[in-house]
Amino acid sequence: MKHIQWWMLGILVGSMLRAEPASLTVMLDWFPNPDHVPLYVARDRGMFAEEGLRVTLQAPADPNDPPKLAAAGKVDVAITYQPTLTFARNEGLPLRAFGVLVDQPLNTLMTLREKGIQNLADLKGKRVGYSVSGFEEVLLSAMLKKAGLSLKDVRLVNVHFNLTPALLSGQVDAVVGAYRNYESVVVEKQGKTPVLFPVEQYGVPLYDELVFVAGISTLKNRKEVLRRFVRAVQRAIDWSRAHPDSAYAIYARANPDADPNIDPEAFRRTLPAFAHSQTMRPEVWKEFTRFLQKSGLVADTLSVEGLFVSLVEEKP
Image 1 (cartoon, one colour):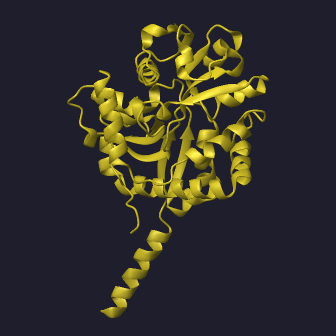
Image 2 (image 1 turned 180 degrees about the vertical axis):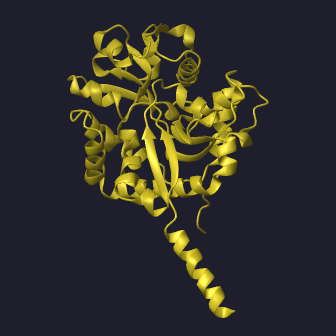
Image 3 (image 1 turned 120 degrees about the vertical axis):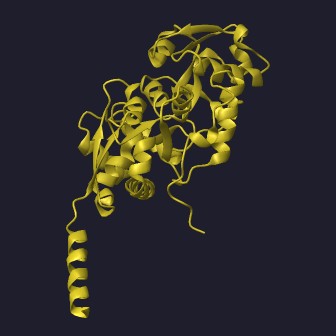
């Protein structure tokens, strides 16, 4: 009987060792860029494979698509933004965050040194460009309030996602929604000096810039696979911090169209913002959700607990 048991155990172990890796489709929030370096590191250095995963990275045709496709189960995982997820849940999409790629805002209000805007009070009477109606106006309103101003004190200009060109061309005096790790580099490469006002330092609560989301059905049926995914991602983030040049080289090999004049420096500026843990932070989500609720962008009845789930617990 013992021989039979050991024989059966041998077959079981052998079967497990030969098991096919679990396939996982991950849709990026937009075209590949330095924010995504850890994903390419995890794939290239075998971190996904060591977790028994075969991960396929996809870029969306439309940046609005990833959360919708994840909610519908068309992709397993999508990268999106904490504010975007909150709006999606407010609209009833069956979606939750379960991991973090960038755990602090990258958003800023940006101007140029030549504009002479040294503090937010100097924005009075100035033209401020924005792209996303509603959310960016709320961010700007909160920031202006810290300076004793309101939206009535500035001239809002919808520049339709052309933030940097509008600023550089003089169409506007400042823009809200520019990222400190990317648009600032673009401006510098044009020979200009950007002046940045980080949103979280001027009245906007801390939030996770980039999060991993999945449909509720996927979270229910593939929880262990997703747990292994974020475990590999965190290992890749930690490795990228320790080996930034090698990490960027992996990304550049995988993306030949990466801009050698912009992306290396953009990645360097992104490194401090990559997630330090895959355990979700309820206090951060609660405070930012209350901020959106007070602003009238989401319903007061929206459940914060329904926005995210922690799959990886911190070690004691």
